[in-house]
Image (cartoon, rainbow, N blue to C red; front, top):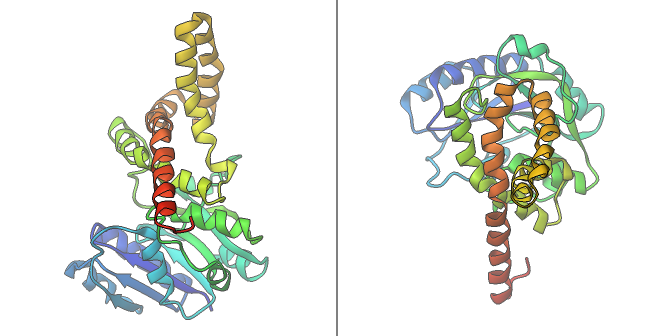
Length: 298
């Protein structure tokens, strides 16, 4: 029997948690909620459902890899569905089939942000892993030593890369799940700027995977695409005609993101990601140097 694991934290909305739990108990009779929210309203909602409710203290510093390890330590089955507390899964059949029948170690659904989007086909190159709406084979995750807790963020990309480099099968299903939280949607200037602030530190973890030998080209294409805007800009200062190179680059972005407005709102966080690359490289080089000085093998 598949087991559903759900983390509930201090920032979660009550209505999201309720919809997620309603979805979870429809998928499996075995649902475990790891609750470190320290909120009585959320505790009351959780206890309305027939689920195992594990209460813990709030994390002083958010570490998503550590949170995933704590969550998986509660599992009693090898076939595990992982859901975030703002996700609705209509049916988990495709997830379960990938792991139980096709031998995948890790599979996931991409997000839809409206009911209408649930039927939207997966786009070419849409591969970003997602632990908020996923199924895993716990035996395979244990084989790689569980989550590496130095990856405080981007633990889903780390898991994908680690399993793939270990020869395990990983990949998404065609179906989508409903993401109730639209803060990552980049639908307006405000959300675009919020995502840009997040992207200023993401290169730290992307470069960490490069230094650990886990880099996957799929997840580094953003640096080359958005970095090209800076390269063309510098080149144009020397050769003005080089600015014409922006035409195909922008055209590709508009087509990929589905419109001029969508491209513009994704351009801002993309440029933030690309400009943060030197920070990510320097942070990891300094970390490697300090380990060597301390006699610790990276």
